[in-house]
Amino acid sequence: MNKYYRCLRNSLKTIIILGISFFISLIIEEFLGASTLIPAIMALAIFLISRITDGFLYGIIASVLSVLLLNFAFMLPYFAFNFSISENIISAVIMLIITIMTSTLTTQLKWQEKVRMESEKEKMRGNLLRAVSHDLRTPLTAIYGSGSTIVENYKQLSEQQLLQLANGICTDSQWLMRMVENILSITRIDNEGVKITKTSTVLEELIDSVLIRFKKTYPDQKIIVDIPQEFISIPMDAVLIEQV
Image (cartoon, rainbow, N blue to C red; front, side):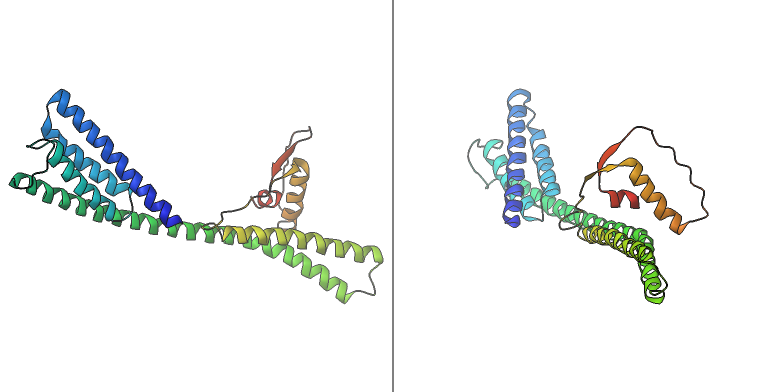
């Protein structure tokens, strides 16, 4: 289906550009009498078609159609095909050569651009994954620490302490699951894009959560917080914003 729509889109582009060029050529011929400009206009149309369509086919078709239009409407005898004149044959060959060269160049440029974009996406994906790797280790360390404390000191811990440790494990596990989901979304950028789930989040609670996690990693770092006194609730993906 995508191939069909791509073919239809390229065909429409070819028809529209050729139609506009032919219309402009008629106006120039009618009002300016500058028929020498018409081949240049059609050559420009072929270049544009080769540049914005996929592959060689549409440029070659446009070249053939341009030659036929020039022969039919702008060369003697008017409104009749005549390829017996050597000038017409040479014009057709030149237009085809221009088309092939332009299509080859634009195809190479598109391929190079595609390679560059893929490389940038891979680089961006790698940077994102490296950026969140530290955030992944932090909850895992907390979960491991709480679990080890429960296993090693089960009999010495009170019920309240056990509940507190278990609650910390649940909280960190839930946060870790959200992070993993976001990372999986990042790896699907090419296919589905990153899905952002926005929920109404209180700014003060978000800042508190960030500070708590930050203090676990950098306990000696001095933090100065300056937020408005009024109640502020913002639609956002809280986990992604915390990572930011």
